[in-house]
Each structure stands twice: as C-alpha cells, then as structure tokens.
Amino acid sequence: MTTGDWVEADFDDLEISEIEHHAVPLPVVAIVGRPNVGKSTLVNRIIGRREAVVEDVPGVTRDRVTYDANWRGRRFTVVDTGGWDPDATGMNLRIAEQAQIAAELADVVLFVVDATVGATDADEIVGSVLRQSGRKIVLAANKVDNQQMELEAAALWNLGLGEPYPVSALHGRSSGDLLDVVLDALPETPRQTFEVERGPHRVALLGKPNVGKSSLLNKLAGEERVLVDPMAGTTRDPVDELIELGGKTWRFVDTAGIRRRDRELQGADYYAAMRTRAALERTEVAVVLIDASEVLTEQDLRIISLVIESGRAMVVAFNKWDLVDEDRRYYLEKEIDRQLVRTPWALRVNISAKTGRHLDRLVPALEKALDAWSTRVPTSRLNAFLTELVQATPPPVRGGKQPKILFATQASIEPPKFVLFTSGWLEDTYRRFIERRIREEFGFAGSPIEVTMKIREKRKEKK
Image 1: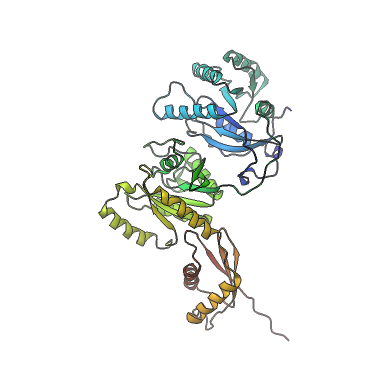
Image 2: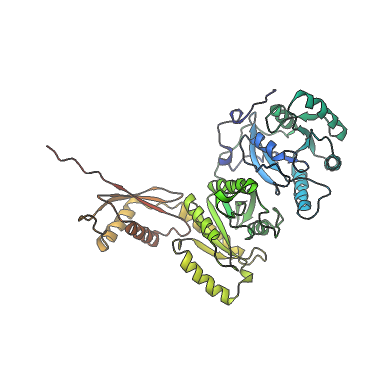
C-alpha cells in the first residue's frame, strides 16, 4: 500500500476515544527520537487528527502522552514522547528519561530520525540503547519529501537498526507504508474483537500553572508519571493515567495550566489550552486545583466557570494545605464566601499533593459528584414538589399576569437538565430560586444543573 494522502478516511467510523475497555490489552507503539525530528507531527498523522501539540521549536512535548489509533482494522496505542537527548541536563534530562521509559514499556519502538540532517551522534547513542533494549525497532527516516531525499535516507542503514523507512509526517508521503511495517511488528491481537463496556470514570485535573496538578497525579499514581518542575507551564499535552483508588480504576487526565485568556495565548501555549478544553469535554468530572496558600485569582474563577460551562461534575481541591496557617484559613473562607457564591454546590476537599494529606477524601468526593451528575428525579416526584413550592411561593407577576408552571420534567442527565412548561415568562431570579430549592430537595452536590423553561403558545380564539 503506497499512499501519500491517507487521513481520517482510512479509519473506522467508530470513535476510538469512546471505548475505554477492551477484552485484551492493546499493543503499544512508542515514538522516540531526539528533539525536533517531527515525532508529534507523525503522531498526528498516525491517529488521523491534530491532537499532539506541534511547534517549530524543540522541547514542546515533555511527558509521555498516549493516544488510541487504528490502521487496517488493527487497534493499538501510540505513545508520544519528548526529545531523547543523551547529553541533556536539568528538565531536558528528565524528559529524556521519560522517553527511555516509554521505549522500555512498548511492544514496538518507532525511532524517528531527521533524514535532512542524517544520523547525528545523539541518534547513534539512542540507537545503541534501543538495540540493547530487546524491543522491536522500526526506523523512520522523516522529512523525506521527494525521491532524491529517499536516496539520502538510505545512509541511515549505518545506525544498525535495519531498513530506514522514508516518510514525510508533514505531508503524509509513504505514511501508509510505514504503518504497514509497524503493524507487521506488533504482537498478534484479535482484530475488532473487543467488548464495549463503560470504562473507568474520566477525571480531568485543571488549574492555573504550578498549582500542583502533576504533583497530585504522581502522588496518586505512586510514581513520577509526569514531569514536575517549579517552572510554570511544564505540562503541555493532556496526560492520561489509569490509577487504582478506593477499589476502582480511574482515568486521570493531567492538563496544561490555563494561564490567561485564550486570545492572549500564542504558539504552544495556545494549542495546549485548546487541548485542555478538549480533554475536559472527554471527561466526566473535573478536579479544579486551587493554591490554598495564595489569594483566589481571576484565573481560578475563570477555570471554575469553564467547568460549569462544560456541564461536568466538579470537585474543588484546595491544594498545599500544609502551607496554610490559621490566619490564612480565616481569610480563605471569606474569599470563598465572596467569590464562589454562585457555586456553593461544588464539593470541596483540602489536600496536600506534596505530603499526601487528606488524599483519601478525594475519591468519596468524586463518587458523590458523579452520582449527582447522573441522578434522575422521577417526573411525579418533581411535579409534586414544584406544586407545593409554587403554592408557597408563587412566581412574580409580569405584565399584570402571573405565569403558571403547568408541568415539569427532567430532560436529561450528565448533567441534569430540567424543563419547566409555563404559561408565561419566569424571571431569572425565580428560576434561580427553583434551582436552589431543587438542590435542597434532591441533592446534586458536586454537579451543575440547568433549569430552562418552555412557554406555551397562546391558542388562537375560535371564530
């Protein structure tokens, strides 16, 4: 199969991200290479959509980031990694270590080399490490945009990793051929034989930069799964991790810190913010981390509003509680009462990701929020409750007439949405009053709810 233009059309119509549980574990392909050789671009080409953050500077990808992929009816997991530089120091060294871990855990390693540069000393060192790993290696000669470059790519035989397969991740040239080789190297797995079940609950970790999202994920996982650094903005791609907590498996998603308004972002930060929003849409509940040792900021409130707009269940985790003294606790309560007055329903936990303090309270809060998010109130109970409520507190008169609530129903769950069928317009304050009383009667702690109305059209008088 020689294709230069394969894209999403070659994939099955089935949405991969919706299937969280498989009858057998999917084989893993780790994409590694030194910085700026086009690994993330190749990842986007393989999965058929722009998910991995790409920018023309080295070091954009930092953590191990997993994606589901499908080619010729075979499903597998792709792991995008940061640049593997043997001479790296500081954070770059930790990025390289994450790449090496990904290679050690993979079934197949796709080693990407920039064919326009040729094999560098760093490529040779990485190639030597890969040969000793015992893993199956597929050598991709990237940035081969024409036939002349194919001849130059042949020089990569010198790496001792077998045949170099020329490809252009940017333009898609020979990408189908490369995937055919990768599939042949994968261990045998049944094709399209998997059970469709509802998988682990998906939890997004959100917050402004340096609030402790990655530290929390590492603490919950019991290992350094994602990079943690005092430098703000370390995480750029959403990072998924399956973690066993409270007797259940949860899928936690560490996201990039939201710094400022989207229109003020540029480059990798802009795309990282877009990935964070997309990751939130794919989850069920969000944990919004707030630095309890600092004053609540506009960024914190904006992130909470983002979760509310997305309709996801929410737990607000006040992190770094070990740094909070009695005075700070007093003023924090005042700030919460003043600035979070519209979200009193959000569940709250006080934790320390660094020390692990009170992390055992996180799972009960998540479970309670998810239960509320999927709660359905029987129509008979809802209307009986509203009848008593309206009798005790009728809607305000509008235009000389008092509107009536004729009927009510819960239209959907996840999040819960209620529809009031009325004879006239209900003031916003009265609808908020109804929402508050619904919460008091039926719960919904940790979940947003929506109360809308549908006004009955006036019947035309008979002639």
